[in-house]
Length: 295
Length: 115
Image (cartoon, rainbow over all chains, first blue to last red):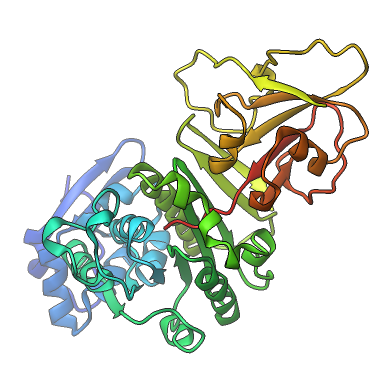
């Protein structure tokens, strides 16, 4: 099959060099396509003096899929996969929501990350936070997230920020970002993050959890900040927040983070964003049900 | 005074993927002789504690005399006003003083900020 399928390779890469790393696959009804393994991409990147990420983009432009993304094909086109590789996502908070979100974004193929958390893993995080393990208690969450990212996706360009998100630090954190994922656990910082993201031109994806329920929405420039409309007086009333009474078991952060990632990826891969009413996605795993509410 | 009660659970294993469940909820008490409005109410997280035996899969059917606002509905249900942060009327964000109509769907949410 390989002989009869036209193979196009990036300029400067001959088929002799990468032949051992290529495989041909058949998608029913779509014809054959080529994939290249990580070892082949590494070789090509070295030859061309490029980063792994840039080499992956070159192969995708020729319709040759990095083998790691073979099963993304069908959901994403080569163009969409390229957009993901060329995007940078800021994840504010690397705990319950953040750990799941970072993992999903990396596996989907986001190529740039800025992961931020000033906090360290605590024993009470073990019930839900993906990167929290017994041997990591006391370690900084963003540092561990950075290490995990490199283990999942060596091509990803990762910046780690262990500072708190403040008016002063937000512009630096948001540098080059397409999207900011709000995986925080305190409302004042969420409000600050939304304003800073919209101001910088990045989309803002809110996520919050309490008990078996979760909430998520996408906001993007030039819309006004939405969180302060939803929670106008929540800043001073943290003790009334649902998570303080209902806890946060493992399920709600996992599913809510998946919804946040879906919103972020849809924003990154969209060719043109049609104006639409902003929706708050509410999920209630105790039923279970998911609903979209217009906000 | 509004009369309300938890509706019996649906016997289904399928997760619902929309807010289309109003037809399934039934009131335990519904013997109001005078004309009332019937409101389908959903409560989130901590607000459920205000209504004993609240069933999240069906919500509540509440009979209330017109004219009524969302704030009056919340009061008659005994929901703690200071904990209500977001109100949705028929799937849209709405203020507490919005008027109610028969068959409206109202959802009350507290502040949720866990991450």
